[in-house]
Length: 346
Ligand SMILES: Nc1ncnc2c1ncn2[C@@H]1O[C@H](COP(=O)(O)OP(=O)(O)OP(=O)(O)O)[C@@H](O)[C@H]1O
Image (cartoon, rainbow, N blue to C red):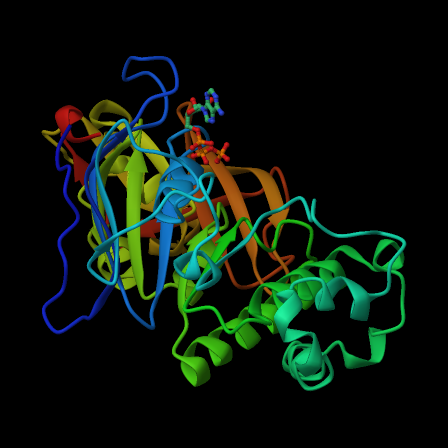
């Protein structure tokens, strides 16, 4: 594999680290994670990205002390992380996990009751101000008397996050937190989480499959493939200069082609694979150059994505002028930028 160790940025205080951690479920490297070293900076949003089954949740659980590594170490504030299955310790209250399934919520109980159950018994006297604060923070105070089971997916997710925040954790782990949440609601929730991170200096570890979410929310991305770290950097670094084809395919709507197919687009490449981002293709107005056929028009809200074809090569094009190029019409294009990847780096 190309690179196995995430690099830490100078000046960042680290809150969580794994050093050469391996966790395999079947005794070989085919599942889990292998020899992973990661540094999680305090007060930032770090996203773990990778294709399905690459080991993101396993890494999250190792960092939370929910899984015992086969080898290697996990540190929280520089101290070995105790395992949760033995007993919940002070460290564990400082790390809250929000997963996709809301499994610890009681659908018949009210929002207020569900959130209150997140408090330790000794803290019951402080229930009123703490629950009020959590509900207000997530903008769901008005829902306090509603049964949890009657809420929409987005509202449920806000309640789950409010419950995770009630003990003011130092680390909030979010595993696919916005899966059930529709687009309009999602942006508001993402914004609120960013605010909480800033105001409370909370560290967030985020697992997501949504490129827009990853790019807009994360301060740092860790890319994981087949249980190993293959690349890391800021969203800007990885978006504009991905080292790996794998990374660009996760983060960007793009077209992947062989060097021979790229020649159809006027690109001469000596390397194995060429990638063109949809946003780097512009539509030209010259009728003579209109050699591409629009095959599909994908509605994306305020813009469209066109799939166009020429000589059996398909290309994705970002089209801001919606409705102008229907299926079957001919267009010309120019490509502003492309990326080349050698096979050994993919
Ligand atoms: N409890 C388990 N027992 C056996 N194998 C497991 C277990 N948990 C995960 N695995 C396997 O380990 C690999 C990594 O799983 P993991 O859930 O960490 O991946 P992921 O990147 O989070 O996937 P997804 O994006 O689909 O949630 C997969 O091959 C998975 O099948």
